[in-house]
Amino acid sequence: MISNIIINKISAENKLILKKQEKKMEIGNTLSIKKIEEQELVSGSDKKEKTLFISYEFKIIYKTGENELGNIDFSGSLLWRSEDIEEFIETWKKDKKLPEKYSFIIMNSILRKCILSAINISEQINLPPPINIPIIQEKKVQNIEYIG
Image (cartoon, rainbow, N blue to C red; front, side):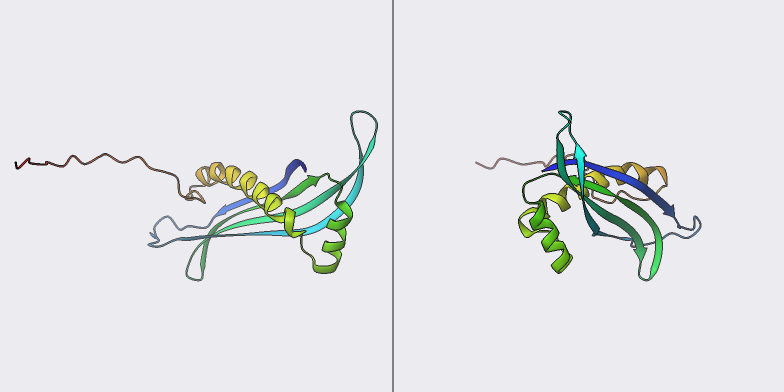
């Protein structure tokens, strides 16, 4: 179970040249797990509990063709507590991967945390949001004639 997601570092840069209007901007992202470490944390009842620190990097890249127009980078840790800690460590040592049954929970949680932060950051540095934001549009009224 995830007990906390921490963002330790955020880096953002807008490389757009104001005079040059870019026609088609691509926004891509990558999420990678960098390392997994086991540590014992003391809980509120002074009980030591095994915890995994899962270090990650999440990068959002804005580009046209080969030209990078901007980026937003995150690095941090996710704290995981469960009985399956040995399985995590074995899978990581063997394949440098998360156990399949938990990977989607961990990856989606990191994505959610970083994407929500990136929306605000992209606005601050004048880049488009990293995801499509729903837009409400005016409804067009159609003239329907009754023929009866």
